[in-house]
Image (cartoon, rainbow, N blue to C red):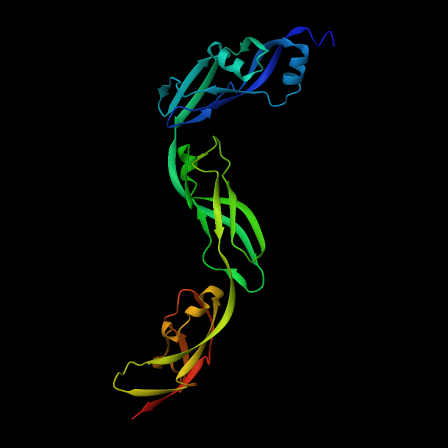
Length: 294
């Protein structure tokens, strides 16, 4: 304990992290990403705060760094002696910095390019019985800006989210999804690191709607009669929309030009107009007979 209470000089390796890069620039190289800082302090403080800390990091503010251009490259440097004050504020107040090696930190840049890309959610949905997605899932924001080296930015057309699995859904969902940003060098900058996913889940039921059949014919002078004159449209609809169903919202038809020799007096029934909130399952009967009236 007596020895640990004494003061010592100790060289310690620190990882240097650049912050506040020059506007419009991307950092492409930093050969001096690790520096040796000699600190003075009590043995106990040095041992507990420095020696046992595996994440010794100091930051360097490059916002006002002067750059020199060489073609598409830019370079700048910072004298370590001018950073001692900043480094001291990042260390415990009882420690004193006595030396920094190397004495100059060099940085290399290129122009940063920016592009807007869409976000693709990667989700797996499993619903409880009778429940389904009421409308399409939504994410906010649905696109983000990425910036970085031109060749890296040009090769990216979308950003995917992390994969998430939602099971036994019967209620609406709001969830935060992290973005799976491509790993490139130097790293991309993104305008957002996550998006918000919204799922509207609703209970659905099966409904039957009786709808008159409209017969399409290339000869408008002929009159026809169909058997039956109405068909049942079997559809799936959300419980909240069930009372909105009305036959006038549906149109079904049969095209007389679709008849075949093998089934010349029977025509398949097709769905024309339907409400946006229903999904047609089937039509009963799927074919109708017709007679030409003279």
